Length: 254
Image (cartoon, rainbow, N blue to C red):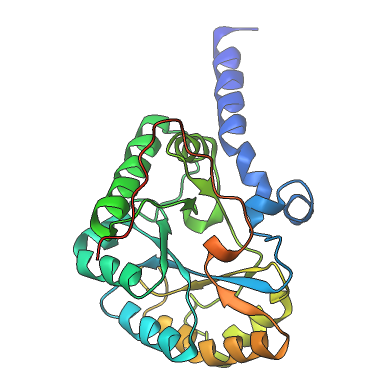
């Protein structure tokens, strides 16, 4: 084999290894080997409510007020770049009883290997959540739900457990309405489910967060009717990541 085919084969092997963790998105693996990563909780009466892409001063406060009215708490997967622009809102999430987690620094696709960049950006995002919100995050969700090798390894080294979702509302589209978000999410709202929604349209259709806001009362009512509790991942009976020996714990700063 000449040098060129060997180099091509080596590059293909690196790309395969980089993309291999993304297989957890496949339904058969989500239902069997990757249940924890997919977001299946062990509590049959709990649904984890999660929001991605914030905090966003234009929309997140409305979501927080709606959750207060419903008596529900959630896990917010924050983008470091968004949190840096609205640190007070990140702190408010915690003060109002919600859980904060890491969604990366930028909302970018990670199709190609860049382990140094992935580790640097994920560490930066984790430190931003810790320092600006006052708590040490437990969870990581990759942008677009595509888990590749670099971020997966970086998250593990940072003591973060990767969690995707088992149900969504397709609330990021321009066509989304409160009714469509509810109708899309409803079949997946069973015990142990993790629901993906968005509290920002920074990577979605402009104003799409309003469909999420409109759907929240119906989603909460559905859960109540079926004896399910909406809450954050910390109450979802998904084991949190093991802390490394000597790693400090951070508590909320009030």
